[in-house]
Image (cartoon, rainbow, N blue to C red; front, side):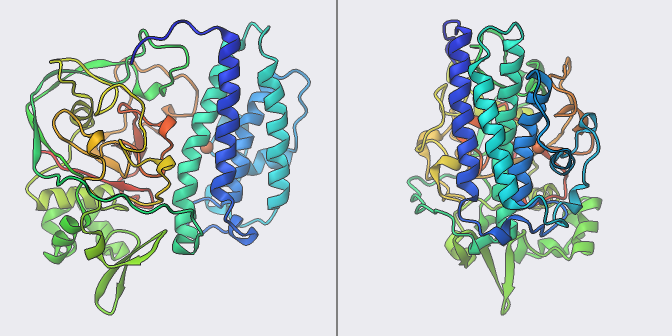
Length: 446
Ligand SMILES: [Fe+2]
């Protein structure tokens, strides 16, 4: 990424103001097709009712106003309780599994709360110019917007769990596959600079604390799949009895297979002995989807497939190296295709408007130097790496990323529900190994 000239604080306030407006508007666009009843239902302990997301993302900005706006009066103590997620530092809260057990605050009250916070926040951002703590505030507002983009993606997962094809998503037609993608890229090992390089970046550049600091790791030579594992590939594993053979599974995976009676990824349904896949577009035969990345698989299933295929999952350093390899030896680029931002031709992200994975080979422009495709967008990709702090990690914000450094696995690359402005090759997403309501798939390494 080129280094932009120093941006004067007033223009940074203005651009944060614009970003605030567009991000906040998109959350409401996502939920626009919902009916009132849809907003309050919780269909599983791991999901949250849409009303909660609408309020919680506003609650986040209310904590900013409460801290930095002199004389700000709390909107409602009850809302503080209902809309806090997991922040001990912000007081007591309703437990996540119980978010769907209340009908109050109502959807209309929640939307009024949201409008109130927006009105206050817009004025607050406009009047920062003369404050000494302006930079600190702008950073927290930016954090709030990145937080909201994470919730936009969670909203897509949760609405899918709630309604799936009953949701009237504004689906655009899937792009065709332009290029056959096969085989594995051979990547040379050696020292690799893992993580986000914060030096020399313009002040507007954003990365989470967990992507920093950039540091050296040593990699052996490795191979990585050019394409994500497809529905067709995965169906072979299923047809070969993959879910019935303990040899492919970690102990925790085999336990889940037996306990939860897993026989297929989430959203696959057995109809008269035939597997069908339900998504926002309806019910499909796997044959129609055989060239699309498989999704809604857990780390445990991805690992079992990889073992069955005689491969393994990549580490996050291998994944990042494959995604950032530049043709200039030993240098690193921001995205697989270079340093320019994602656009419609480079990867399937939220703005593409597909509400679905796209066929493998639909984004040749987004390919990496080694020929890996769809690393950015479509599905988050499981890695074998534990979600842990990088050496030299420094927390930028208490209880945001740092309290989750136990027991989760890292996923890379973003999905069709990730906003374009939110993703980077160094982005570390994390979920528990058994979770699969997220849009997660994988590619293998050797
Ligand atoms: Fe949150």
